Amino acid sequence: MNKLGVQIIGDNFDVNQLAGAYKPAMVKLVDCSVDYYWKVRSIVGSTSIIIVRWYLPSQPLDNPEQRADEWFNSHKVYIMAVKSDYTLFEGYNEIADSSAPQYCAFELHRIMLLESIGANACIGNWSVGVPGIILWTITYAGLVNKCTGRHAIGLHEYWADTADIDNIWHCRRYNMLPSLATKRIVITECGRDYLSDIKRGQPGWQLTCSANTMLSDLFKYRDLINKDANVLGATVFQVGSTDSRWKPFDVSQLWASVVSSYVKEEVTPMATPIPIDGRLMSVSEFSAYAPNSDAKNWATRVCIHHTYIPNLADWAARGWEKRKANMAYYYGVTLGWNSGPHLFVSPEGIGLFSPLSKPGTGAKGLDPEGGTWNDHTIHIEVVGDYTINPPSGVAYNNAVAAAAACLQATGKNIDRLTYHHNLQADTDCPGKGFRNIWAKFVFDVGALINKVNLSNESPTPSKIRWHAEEAYRELKAAGMPENSIGMQRLYELIRLDGGLMYRFENSQKGG
View 1 (tube, rainbow, N blue to C red):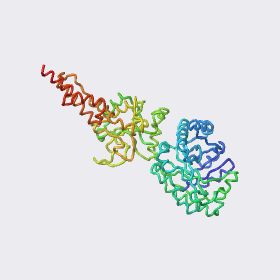
View 2 (tube, rainbow, N blue to C red):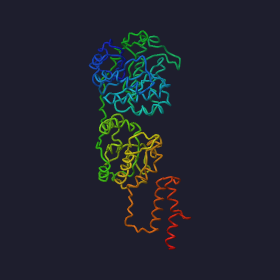
View 3 (tube, one colour):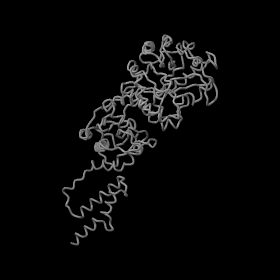
């Protein structure tokens, strides 16, 4: 009920007007001093969200990462002075769709910089109707996925008149995108304005309605966002500005009525981070651990995923020790899950996340063999973005070893190794780059599980031919392309119409 807050520009608004008996869920500060921030914090309390923004006359995106560095370096001292779990920092403001790729790169780098000092981002801060739907799902998909932990997605929502509050493209457009359903949303500007797409309204409520009508609008909007649990709050534009352009938007005369509408709210117990194992193991340590993990009592399959975000470079910047707690918070608090994937495999080693002794979470849907996919599946996250390129090097080798050890722990073989897209068709995980080498991955896992020892076999031509034929059949069953060089070479050894091994075997008999 207290989701309506206000945007304050400068240090002149009386902070005592922000709260009465009860406090707002959120306020926003633009170009306010550190001292003013702490005055506001003393009034709204330690758990109200404060969003901080600085007005920038220029918002260059010619070199996104460099520009993010410049933004960060300009404001780092301030951020360090006020950062908290309940403080979010905005970057650029109302960037157009025409600059979406550059802005996405800017925001991703800015988030990394904020995370490096333990601060939280308000991501996006887009104007009404922006981004377009296709940009949400393609260009900004990585940025949306990055919105984890205490980061939030910032949107501006304005309406032309009371009826326009029901226009889903102007108000609550986040509900049109399933990918935002689990993300923390903050409405960092709202109110009455001119909306060019419908050619209605005026820039500021004072130009179109009375104070009572505007209050009614605000309460109607508040009642709508109260239906959306992932919306943390909305700040009305504005109070405090001395700029004549923003005077028609000034809600100072309304604010006592808004504050008096605040009520005592029942505090819902906050979700907690999921319990995790937390150990980082070498391949040899994990191979010794897995058979004694009780996985055989419940698991019948192993499923491979990729993290997508973070990629390998982002992961290396923080590593397992720092990321595991953040992920436990994300799965438990942000998503409300009670478990996560079982393993995170990276060049560092094999990170044990959810215990192998019981089911975790990694795929949606019902298992045709009974229950849900999660009821019987060990989930392995291979760290990296394999949308285009396949895993390689130490990360690949560790993934092979982890999958083999998990299959052995369940008493299963490579026919029970699968990937996320096979279980859940609406995801591309673990990326086409990984899926393009799936046959090789399965073969390499199988080679660890089904080690062949021929030291006691008689070295006869018939035995050698038989093993070559078996190898060919096993590779083919694992999905190895028959037109690959290695498969063609094996076929030339074993083909019935004159294969090299048959000719050799016959020559020995003739001798």
